[in-house]
Amino acid sequence: MRFNIAIDGPSAAGKSTIADILAERLGYTHLDTGAMYRAVAYSALNKGIAYDDEENIVKMIEEMDLEMPADGRVILEGNDISEEIRKNEISMGASDVSKLEGCRKALVAMQQKICADGGYILDGRDIGTVVLKDAPVKIYMVASPEARAERRVKQNLKKGLEADYETILEDIKKRDYQDMHREHSPLTKAEDAVEIDTSYMTIEEVVTRVMEIIEEKTGV
Image 1 (tube, rainbow, N blue to C red):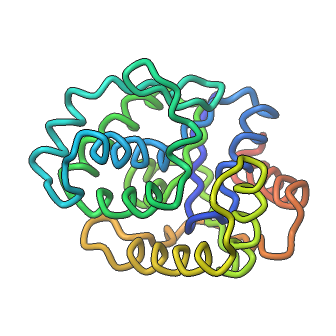
Image 2: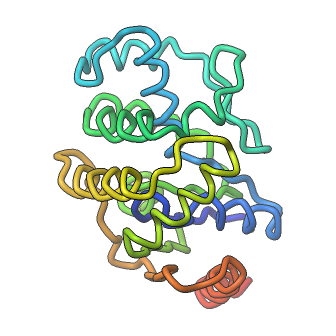
């Protein structure tokens, strides 16, 4: 039986990287829900819609042509925006639009419909607490702000994006505060989630630990 796996945690904790590897090993599909919020912020920015304009943000989502293929790309209106949405300004914009109740409801409904038949790994901020409350496996990944900033710098350098450590560290701290203190679906650990601190773990060590948790929870 194919089940869903929920991975939550703050920005740059390694959720997407781990989800990608798990999806490949298990033959599942990774749905990056954070990328969906980034796509909303990216679209709003390009359409000149303010991040706090809930009515027009929701209307935009309803009309949005967004594709999330299994290869991890993010396709908006036929254009690959996978790299553009990783810029710091879009990260903060994603945090802003995620505060909007209407935006969250629209995207959560989309996410639940996509993974209704199981076989998906979802990562984000409210997967275990809102999107996949009944998921048999819930992981809560954390890491120190400093460790996450170092990772983001390395990622950005490889992609030719902004890589100033202090700027990225400050953005991560601001994003954490916004995500944890927003009114609707704030970032919190689900009661039945297993926490993993990835600060000083290698990617393979994290994957091994998650695979152990999957076996413990499901017998697979």
